[in-house]
Image (cartoon, rainbow, N blue to C red; front, side, top):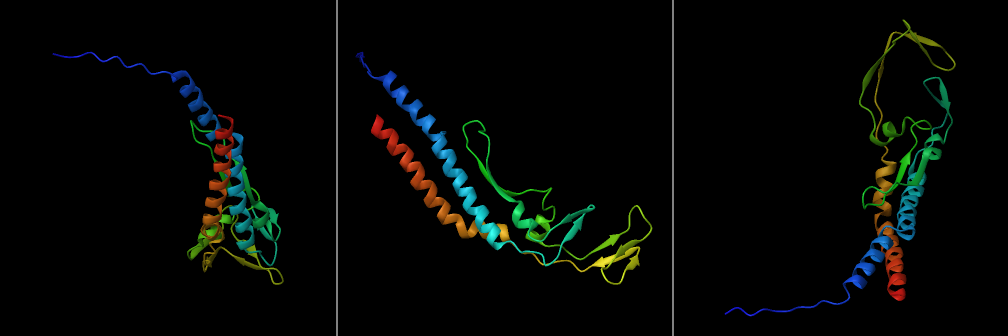
Length: 173
């Protein structure tokens, strides 16, 4: 013989309301600001680690002043993607198109004149060549080192700010 059980659950509407508040808090301004603060910590460390060129360089006819790499480093909030919040630390390509070459280095390679038959280079004594062998450059991992240096600080920052946001929610409930 099977017995019938009657189970009645009360307060489902309140539970659904509380879960919605949790969701809004997890995707809210406080958590987004905490992510942005973490990205700014990484950006500041990358600016400290980034090398400064001793002289101006030219890229596609534009002059990049010394310190252009440091000035190109920014932090910004990302847009919401589904239920995920984002924040970024990055280098602007139009201000420092060479950032990835500094970070990862370059292998030895040939530079060949494309549109013209010869290239002109040198400051005091001008030289002309159709092809030049570049010796390559060593990597200077300023960005990767900044992430490693700030990993624990970002973790502590996020833990404290997110905990404060959820504690404030708990006090209102």
